[in-house]
Amino acid sequence: MKLKINEVIADVKDELLCYEEGEAVVDRWEKEFREWIEKNKGKHKDIVADKNGVFLKIKDEEEIFEIADSYLDAVAEGNVKKYWETF
Image (cartoon, rainbow, N blue to C red; front, top):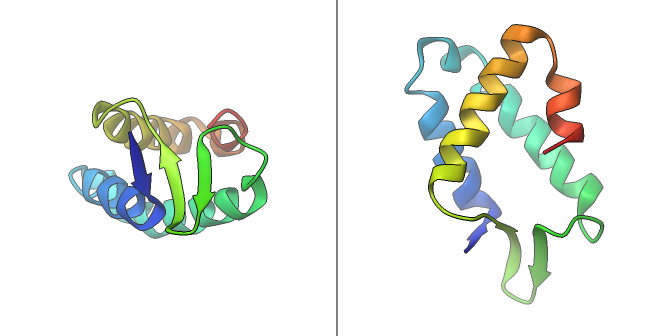
């Protein structure tokens, strides 16, 4: 399934805000995600750009939860750079 970038951001932010520690990182995640999209547009198989905008391909809605959970884990473990390298 394809989701517009703004939908991905809204969904992941909503998921992050479900966690107490998520409130502290939600804006950071959005900033880093937008940077990752710009850096990888046209280079990453899951980023699709067409006349309707830029989309991220995901397997299913469960992947949104995984994106948020793994980011919180990366922040806690100090592995944010690795998170984005393997995103």
